[in-house]
Length: 113
Figure 1: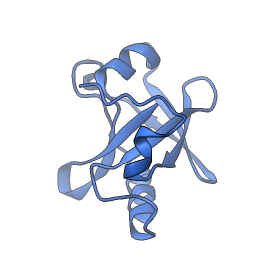
Figure 2: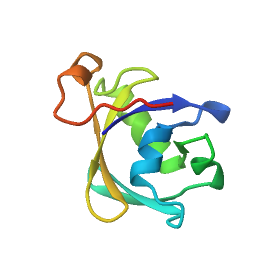
Figure 3: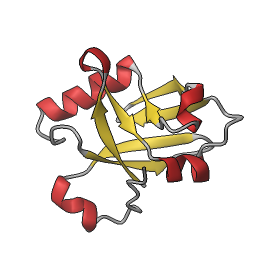
């Protein structure tokens, strides 16, 4: 699926997953998600608000990775599309997507609410 980056509190960058994606792929009884960021795999805690209309993933390590991709030119400025590719149970690999590529990508595009 394709999600987008967001800028939040104190310049923190995270991911906006979308309500539709949350309902389909993130069961409320699983409060954590694993994200594979190149060679690094992190576990992010999902806040209760994630399932109540605020489908965002925030983490300092995710923020640093997104900023490094932006600085290297591999990621556009926010909001930028990012592929969230299934990589196991409650695990996803992140891959930057060029803004123009989001309509041609093999990954399902879903920017729902």
